[in-house]
Amino acid sequence: MISRRSREPFTVWAPSASRVDLVLGESSSPMTRGRDGWWVPASDNLMAKSETDYGFLIDGEGPFPDPRSLRQPHGVHELSRSFDPSEYRWNDASWTGRQLAGGVIYEMHVGTFTPEGTLDSAIERLDHLVDLGVDFVEVLPVNGFNGTHNWGYDGVLWYTVSESYGGPAAYQRFVDACHAAGLGVIQDVVYNHLGPSGNYLPKFGPYLTDGPGNTWGSSVNLDGEHSDQVRSYILENALMWLDEYHVDGLRLDAVHALVDSRATHLLEEMAAEVAALSAAVRRPLTLIAESDLNDPTLITPREANGYGLDGQWSDDFHHAVHVALSRETTGYYSDFEPLSALAKVLTRGFFHDGTYSSFRGRVHGRPIDTERMPAWRLVVANQNHDQIGNRATGDRLSASLDSGQLAIAAALTLTSPFTPMLFMGEEWGARTPWQFFTSHPEPELGKATAEGRIAEFARMGWDPNVVPDPQDPSTFANSKLNWDELQDVDSTRLLGWYRELTALRRSHPDVLDPRFGHTSVQFDEDERWLMLRRGSVVIVINFDEHEHTVSTPIGAELLSFASDGDAVRDRRDGSVHLAPHSVLIAES
Image (tube, rainbow, N blue to C red; front, top):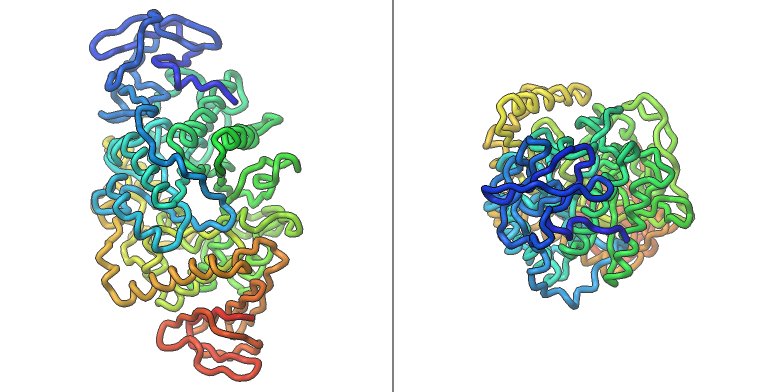
């Protein structure tokens, strides 16, 4: 396992610097150059004390915060503060972890999950998640960013926990509380780019490349000169979350933006390191990639020449479900218009698996070996932070669909052979939007961000005049969940449906069966019904606004939901008559 420099106090990697000074409070002292570009304190007796503020002068510039800072009490531009994670007394000694297979993930943004927007206030809502029947809480990025609130993807100090959420001590309490409630924690991490404000890494060394960048700016130096230490910087961070903070898994943001030409890709190296740590701590540790590549190499085991990650997102599932319900076909939704697209995703995993993508203007993806690949390795959602927040107004499905359609989305997600992920609030049809929000203190950066958002929506055909200003504090405030909605009859009914679906998963092994070959689909393009068979369980869905009869022998009803009245309007030998916007789950 790699050596972790973060355990050594007041050391810093600055290979190109001719002088580095350690700043402790109001004083500073020169450091000594060590091996491989590392600088160490000149005094061997210098020990990190709790609550010590420190930073580094690089060739007279600065002071800059520590690239491996665990705490930034005054923001990303100021001195770091020492923090010792080992001082926390954990209460999860009996926690044995959760495997991804068979699990349900709940995606949460700390700042908008509760009115207070803190990790401690999120702890108070864990009972809701337990009752819902989820297994993992996936937390959007919590590391340091400039400003008071942010999605988390403008982070610049990857080792920190934002003070606005409560800092690292609150994070430890949150993970501990999740484990006590029987919930695993997946932390969303961003290794493909850094935010636009407070990124001082280039002052220390060649963390970024001069080559082709990505959507968000310069690429991280994974394969150039001095890239060994940059890769270690990332790998140490991954191991820190999993080991020192007891996290159960990582969601890796946009791995297609990791430019790495080495023989062993960073992701494969990370999978090997995490597997070694998993063996050492004797609990499952999960790596999930967000990828735009539709490439099963990511989730193919290393012994089969893959990268060895545990799971990856399938946006194709989202697109197919979204179009089947909303009939929205602009931009990247255009290829998913027929129900056959949803049928293919349910049985093959990817829609674009070597097929032409009209949005990209080229062939995209690679087929999954459905004979060997378990379907649970694909993480699917009918809503998530990207697919809601990157819409013009941040509107959820609840803004345009009725309760029956929302129930259909839930049924497809939770009875598919994949690993389902829910986005906070969808379980009761939350009516609050989840918009793109920022709090850049720099006016010019805020203006550029707002203009960039409007330009992004041109290809989707959305009206730029309705795009909320991400810098307006109300955009953030409007995106907070309104828990009072749970008092509404419709919200309570939908929440009950979600709870019934998660309970069905636990009570019927066929619904959890990850073999692609044990899933079959029938559908009628004109009448817009679809029937999903999962072993002994059949899910019959009427997407249409009119009643329809589906010819199929069905046994005892397990669950049903319709926008209005009973889902089953009539039932005769060999057929079932379904209400508009309804779903029936029954024994086959």
